[in-house]
Length: 416
Image (tube, rainbow, N blue to C red; front, side, top):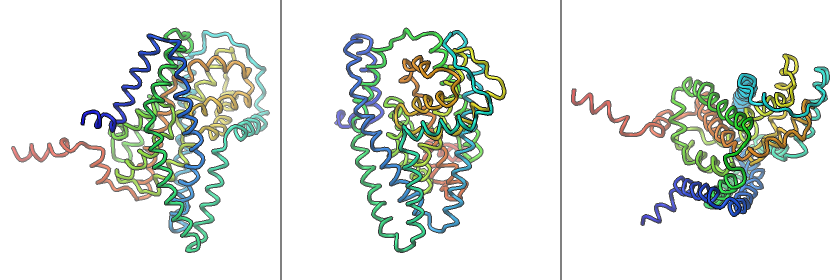
């Protein structure tokens, strides 16, 4: 009986796997580094599933299922406006904290010749070309949008296809849940490799960089996302506690998309509109990755500081404009943020591309990126549902607030 309950408790299983992985990394570092394929295979399966899952989610329930054309247009415009605002705020947060804390001030990496501000269009085009070369998510989402709109405009003729796609969504999420049963094994492999390979002896500048990214993510979640949640009428920390199992899964696998099945179920139970949830989660894992955006600008400022590049006003504006475009190339797949960083470095030409090797040693420590991404997209589901008038606030209150706390005032009032 106890073993059966333990097997069903995903959070506890992952925590046990993490503890075992850390222990192995400390006791047997050489053996621990051989555990890396356990996480690589898991992340590879998840990564290959991302394009299909996102395509079907966007087509079936987010675009084709929105009824009236005006309703679809209004919802899409709200999602776009919200995502754009959060992207800009997260990019600015990452750059501002990195400039303020200067984690790369002690390094002396080689620098490239900074291109003048007049070269901004070519920098943007170069970055876009790099992005399109290494990711299929953006073309897939654009194709899903066009296909879904076609089904919506087809009316009754497209209804049978939409129903089949709805059924396919259920099957895909079921299959993904089965794959996620192996998440503790992947977490064990990832933690064992990280501790065994790198240990506690990272360079001081890299530790400062990691601390800067974590602090920037925490500040963004607390101030920007917390204020957004408060304006919507609930506390962000209650939402975080509600999705803690999914956050734990993401933290120790590094794959944000691993949380999608659980998030869909929990957010719909919390009163969010079903179609809004699937639209926001499917598109948000490319266009609303606030944690990845914070990492992107933090890393660029860090590399510039390490190479002695002075980021004056025009150069900083160019950096933010280019990252606003290249951030669309990030996905929920593990390692995507680093690839986006490489494309952006190539587009800006502020530092040589080889300087990125300095960040490889701490790439697997950037769990705050994925956590911030998941929290941001979960909040977006609630905010846009409320903005669209499709949020069941009673269900939200029941999901986020423990029953014993809601019953306490009545009991106290009765005694009085």
